[in-house]
Amino acid sequence: MTQKYKVLIVDDSPIMQSMISLILKEDSSLEIVGTAADPFEARDQIKALNPDAITLDLEMPNMNGLEFLKRIMKLRPMPVVVISGHATEGSSVASEAFRLGANACLPKPNLSDEHAMQTMRQAVRDACLMGVSKGENRRLSGASTKPALAPALPPAAPANSSAPDIIALGSSTGGIEALEAILSNFAADCPPTVITQHLPGRFSNGLAARLDRAIPPQLKVAEDGETLRRGCVYLAPGEVGHLHIRGRSTLTCQISEGDPVQGHRPAVDEMFRSLAALSNFSISAAVLTGMGADGARGLLALRQAGARTFAQDQATSLVYGMPRVAAECGAAQQVLPLQALADALQGRQAMKKVVNQ
Image 1 (tube, one colour):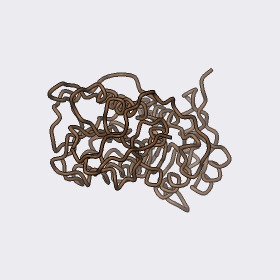
Image 2 (image 1 turned 135 degrees about the vertical axis):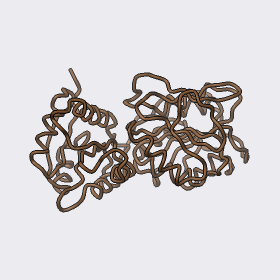
Image 3 (image 1 turned 135 degrees about the horizontal axis):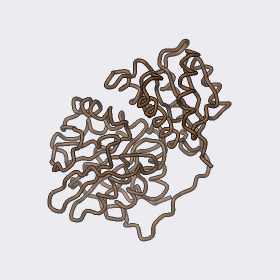
Image 4 (image 1 turned 180 degrees about the vertical axis):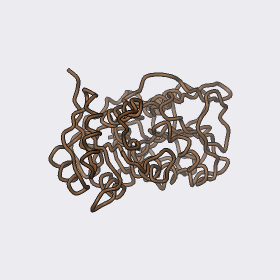
């Protein structure tokens, strides 16, 4: 039996509610459990219906969609797909929605465009797959299932100030803001740095351009076959494939086709595992804010291979999902606030031994 994911539609137009509902109902895995005409009604519906994801218009009465998105991610993090006439590719509105934690931004539907309708169904289904567990809500607490801790983990790296040969970062919801905060404190000649951020492919170039303007090193979308070099940060292209790093004396990017991993392509785990297979390179890696568990297993493999490993702390994470799992399974040697990660990743902070929970 196909698993059903509950979806709440938030839009002030009854016609648009019906159109979105009609499109999404074509996917047997999606169940429309309710509609809301403004953020206050949506708040009540979220409490009553506990949806796996919501679609969100941006122009609504009583409160605009961006402000509501900000409040959702602060008080009740959950997957959100923005559907708005203002959410065009590369627009400042779409960029702001991603910064606040939206999973995807799509234009209003057109019932004569089958490709656009399929894209909408896929975006909502992917968002549902990232559904937040209780442990990922910053305001909730309680027991959680911890992945089994592999035996014979190496201890935390000894105190030193040596820079790594390569730095790797993985992030999802809230990651754009976190990445900018970290990379703004990187040196212009920093070690080559690779990033997997969960993001629709059509927004990869826009994010790269924005971050490139804001940080000292160069930042670009990774290309298949290009050689890693100092002073450059490489962003995995969204949806095309998984970013793998290969090589012996010289490291290169490889964009590898493959199925989504835990609903993600590119996946942080895939990038981290490729780095763990390298020899003769010192590596620093961190799992940042985001929903789900992507990155934890790969970070554990990196730690077992001798890398320095970190996770962002709960206080500075927009959604404490991915870093929580990385910390609980023993993958992260240190759990650090956002403002401390740049120095730690670049080897400018002495490592401290951490006792795994």
